[in-house]
Image (cartoon, rainbow, N blue to C red; front, side, top):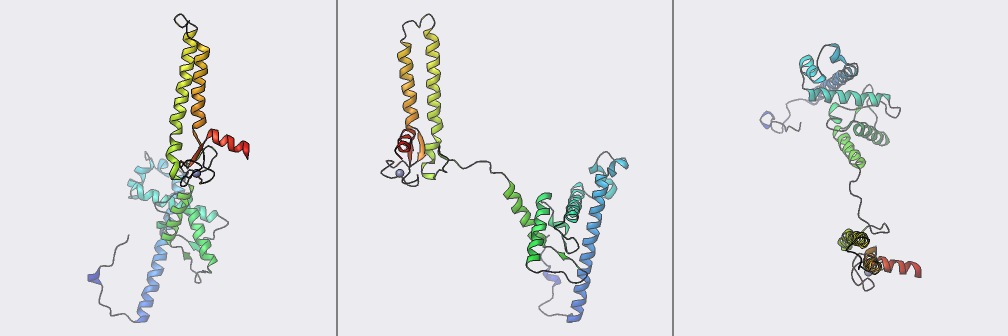
Length: 271
Ligand SMILES: [Zn+2]
C-alpha cells in the first residue's frame, strides 16, 4: 500500500516525455483511476444488494463466507470490505447533507474503520472541503483524501469510546490531585474497619442473649464499639484542603492536602 517507487526503473532526473505527452498520460491515468473507482463502487453496491437479499441462500451456499470464496473467488475479508464500502455509499447517497455527485470516497477510506464513524468522517471532511471553496472540475467529482477520512473516523471512534475509569474525586466530587490520591484510596480500608466493628457489635449482642454471655456488659461494649467506629468516621479523608486544594499540602491541613469529615463539618457550620 505504501510501496516506494522501484529506483531501478526510475531514470535520473531527466525527462524523456514532453510536457504534452506527460499531460496526456496523466489525464489517461486519472481517467483510469476514476474508472477503477467507479467499477469498485459498482461491485460494492451489487454486493450490498446480493447480501441483503440473501443471494447466497438462493444459490444454495451454507453461508456467506463459502459463497464469497466459491462464487466470487475472493476472501471473505475482501467480501466484507466491499460490502462495508457499499453500505457507506448507500448511507451517503441517502444523506441530505452529502452530495454524492460532488464528493466521493474510494474504498480504502472506509477500510478498517467502523461504518458509522467512516460515514460521519466522510461528511465532515467533505464539509471542510466545501468550506475551503473546493469545487470539482466539470464532469468530475472530488474524491476525498482517504487518509484524511480514515484519521477523522479514528478520531470520532475514540471520542465515542466511554471512559472506563472516571477520575477519582473527594467526597464532595472534586477531582483528586496526585498529591493526596493515596489518602483517598485508603478510605476504603477505613470503611472496611468500620464494617468489621459493626460485625463485632452484632456478634456480641447475639452472644449476650445466650448462655455464656450473661456477664457481658453489652450496653457498655456496644457504646465503646460505636465510639470506635465514630472515631474512625470523623477522621477519614473527606475533602481537599480548602486552602491548598490538595495540590501541595499547607500548614492548615498539616501538609496532608485533605481535611477530615469532622473538620469539613466544622467549616461548613462556620461558613
Ligand atoms: Zn492544605
